[in-house]
Amino acid sequence: MNNFNEIKMLEDGAFIYNRRSEIEQIADAVCEKGFCNILFSSVGGSQAMMDPFQIFIDEMSDIQSFSELSSTLIFGENNQISKDTLVFMSSKSGDSKETVAAAEYLKKIGCTIVSVVGMPDSKMEKLSDYCFVYKDGRPQELVMYLLIGKILYNKGFFKDYMKFAKELEQLPAVLVAVRKQADAQALAYCEKYYAEPYNIWIASGSLWPVCYAYAMCVLEESQWIRTKSVSSPEFFHGTLELVEKDVCCTLLIGEGKTRSIDLRVKKFIETYSDKANVFDCADYAYPGISDEFRSLLSPVVMNAILQRISKNMEVVTGHSLDIRRYYRKVEY
Image (cartoon, rainbow, N blue to C red; front, side):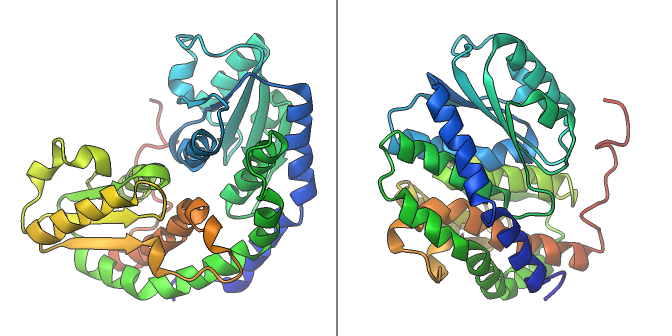
């Protein structure tokens, strides 16, 4: 397998899980302080990493939650934000320009800020009330599962959280197994479609943020591949008209409540495109994870599947995932 280090992946997962108590203490502290609503705000892939958890909150509780990009938040047009708002923010570098500006704005309001960052001693860490630094730990979603899950448990909405959290110890091994199973399909996908002039990527529910971020932050930003992302519910209200026999369509299917919409899209693209591709979480085993938690894990499982496309794509194209023309290269 290209660019695959199983031992490191297991170690990176353990690095986060072994700090479970530290993460849960943050959840306990914000619950003890109290909050009236929850905001998720960052930019790019960091925002997309958090957005499924806003969906989980909406599905599992009556807690008011919302999501807004940091780059627009700073204009001050959202009147839902107050000193009693609990804010989750994320930044791999810890110094993303827009996220830092939003944190400074939220700090003035008096919001409680919890940040999840990759680098220690960052601007975001200094601006946050609570900060978890994951360094090389992966996946970052594991931090959010423990944070949001414990908050929902404390509020009486997730009675099986303790069972779920215990099973999350198996998540790194599950993701390794998923990557191994997905690799052959991912490599074949790259070899066949790497030079497509136009791609349509589709998903719904908690996989929509995954799809959106992958199309933008990997295929477009990291590989310079022209890609259109659209949610499954919106697909039938415009984008379907661009599907032809030679148009490459890629559908991501989870196991959540919107699965039936994805299956409608699957039937359509397989009928009208000769380049229809489907990656379905239901095709994978999750050793050590109870069936009732599978849908919760769809985003992180799909990200593991897509990572095999990324790692193979850079080999097939000869275009490193680290190459940029403009991002953090020029002023904009």
